[in-house]
Image 1 (cartoon, rainbow, N blue to C red):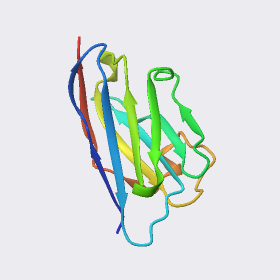
Image 2: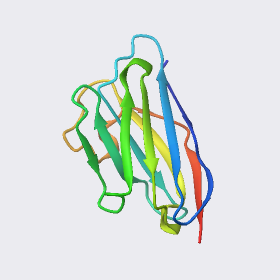
Image 3: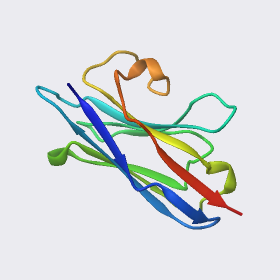
Image 4: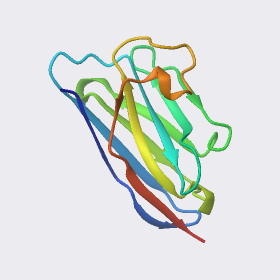
Length: 126
């Protein structure tokens, strides 16, 4: 069983920063790619950022580019999302996602990942 455990969410004022963490654990689990998605009330889950675990190549949604940074710690099977210059529209439940192999070249889509965390709430007050 693979588990993804997120942490670091909370309440922050607009313009502030938060750092989310997601630790992957489980037997015989080899990380291929990890990413972050988010979902606001009444909206569909949307892509935020992704990182290829071996190369470190990253990709971001246009809405967060230049403000958010995704990184990973290979030895810990952990991915981070540094969020700066937060806006009220960043308020959402943030979900960590992981893939143990290539499922899809469309890495901004949910179908590229086969494991999901429970989510962590991020609330940005204006």
